[in-house]
Image (cartoon, rainbow, N blue to C red):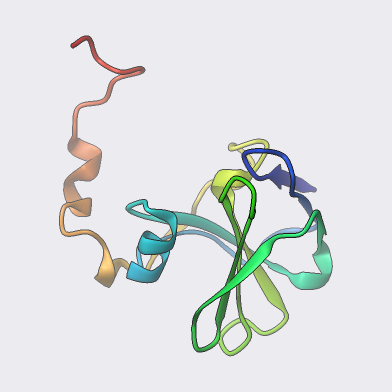
Length: 131
């Protein structure tokens, strides 16, 4: 079982079984909705996901509904009945244990930020570097 929540804790979820995938999405819609260069997703059948609390729904395009916490704004779920009928994508950044569903693939990489290809070669600091 996988569990997670929004930042303020108003919405919790549990997902049973294994996801169809765990991916990093680079599409412009995900980037804009999250304000981030990519978003991690894990796709589950809707009947295997239990949500406690009431997420707010936003229809971001013709077949897409994104759900988020109306209190803290944390993005949580993605539904697209045309592409993934009966399924729900969970933002993996909201998992209680980040080691549970590591991404296995990048998707929509054709829309990735132009600098993403070299992002892993950037210097790495365990915390903010000294000023």
